[in-house]
Length: 213
Image 1 (cartoon, helix red, strand yellow):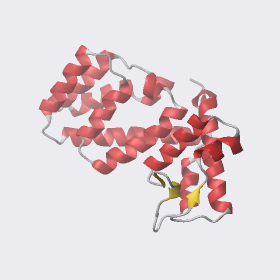
Image 2 (cartoon, rainbow, N blue to C red):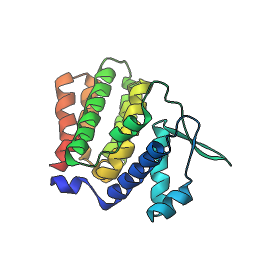
Image 3 (cartoon, one colour):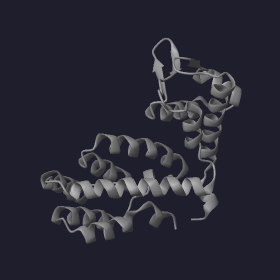
Image 4 (cartoon, rainbow, N blue to C red):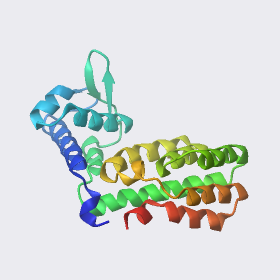
């Protein structure tokens, strides 16, 4: 896959929405507790579909940057020592290198999760997951979701989950691509056997970089 194919028209709309929200926060010097424009207002100002705005706001809410209060609107959350504008800026990744950095960070988080699993005694859960892979069609994203959960580190899972909200926009392969069932099964088998070398050999076979090159 070429570098340009990492950014889709849908992701460009998503990025533009985030850039617009960032500009509003900066220009109006909004801070914790301040209200941002509604989904409808953002859609009208940017002339984009409300569904696209809704997805962008949902991603920011998953990041813990905004909160929606029923009947009141959407508000900026307290970031305490964090600089809101800079943090939002790092989330607006609109060049090829930044997108590759997202994929690399995704890889680091997943490998860390695998390391934690190798140190754990959870073969029963892994065998159940292995049976699921054998009996049903499962995507790479679905398998990694289960594995990162099994790593039993809430912060790691939260960061990985938030990151994949963005990955799903710039790299649809993570969500829709069905990696080889053989490699997924072999990855689980290596985890059950605690074969460290084989685990990471099989991980490379289903990694995002393998699927984009």
